[in-house]
Length: 252
Picture 1: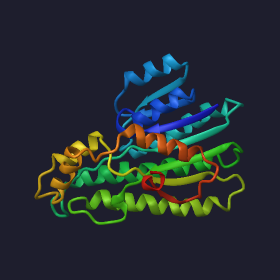
Picture 2: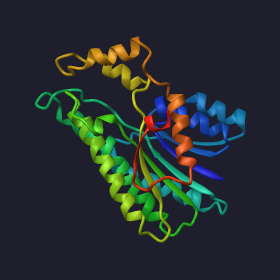
Picture 3: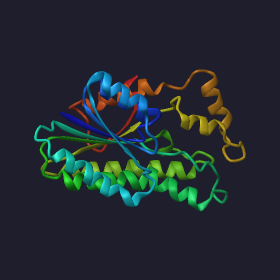
């Protein structure tokens, strides 16, 4: 059986990813602040296994313990075919120029967007170093990792850092005896709650707010379901380049 650990699984891309995985009868482990009853219903309808952990992953001190707990449970299963870690949880706030953001908001964003996936990846690799099954880690990136955006200094920085972490770990794993495959996946603009947060920003904090409003009004936002489908296809491929940052535009 394949195990998928999906963070930020209660909404947006995380929710869409879990829904597709449950239809394929994988064991899906959902980690999110809020429970999603629809996912439990889908799992029951498809005879799939789902485990839900209600956790706030911005509290980074809990992260390694969560990974240890989950992998210990998997180790009891002698028929693990593959383990996939999808580091999807993230936040775009604070949308504020430097000098205007609150310290607590910046700290929370750095912990959730960058430190948490780093810690989860580190513990995942440490504990599965001798495992011979397929091991894949995907970090959800953003186009904001590659260009500065007014008001997004924290978000841009965390996503750029996450991409570099991915590239570096990919290089390291290429020399491991039983390597894990790690990649970043940039989903582009999607019709999610995060876009709603962006559109509600004050123009003085985010000068491009009207552009993002037009994306929504003109139907230019991709559905999370479409993006999730493309991402799962990529994860299932045997031709993934370790440490590469993939963009959904490559699959359109």
